[in-house]
Length: 286
Image 1 (tube, helix red, strand yellow):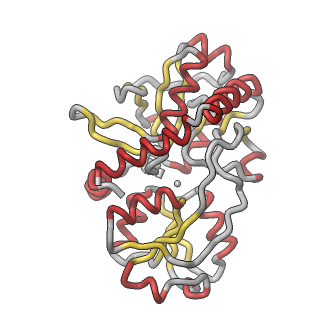
Image 2: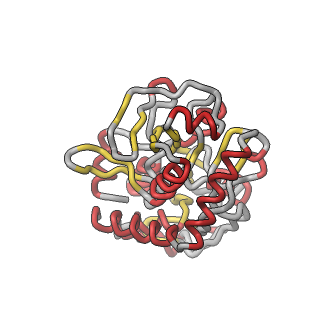
């Protein structure tokens, strides 16, 4: 899913957020964990743990339009990427002993950037599907979430089952697990892939699509923001097993280091705290 908020809607109408960069990787911006933007581009194809330590920077690619995982806020007049994925990435960087830098891209450009060596890892509420595992490695699962279908509130009775969705336009984020689920489980529906999450919500509100498949924590936030949207009772099956961090193939030492941090965060119950904190930020922005 990025990729609900008052700020988010204004942003969606005036410019695009993330899955929020230019699909041309060279023109994408980077942001440090403090929110400071920089034009520096990571070009080395060496994503090994030792190289990360040598350069002193861990580059995390994401699509910051997917609250509460990653999203943008205004802080002291500047845009800053926040969310529980960012909190986890900051802990990973701290354990390695380096600075975290966030690279903002469209969701469907994230794995391209990873394999091109422009990022050390990808965090974007990404599911470790078998197809993705063919070209990249994944960390352990760090968060489990269900999928949900959002529909206009005044059409819920007409769109309350999978049968009701036949022939309807279903919005999904391009390149996401939701797109795969829709293509496999809603074969008689018209699947509409869109790059940016705010555009999915806007199209749903304006009637250009009839429903949207979004991860439930994200869907809950949008519904709280927009009373004219609600959850359909239609159920879809997600067998992907949760969210994990993506790495370029062969970086076993880096994957092990990250898994060590994830294990610590789970034992200390910090991931649940980060999710709670991110949702609180989202609610304050509503």
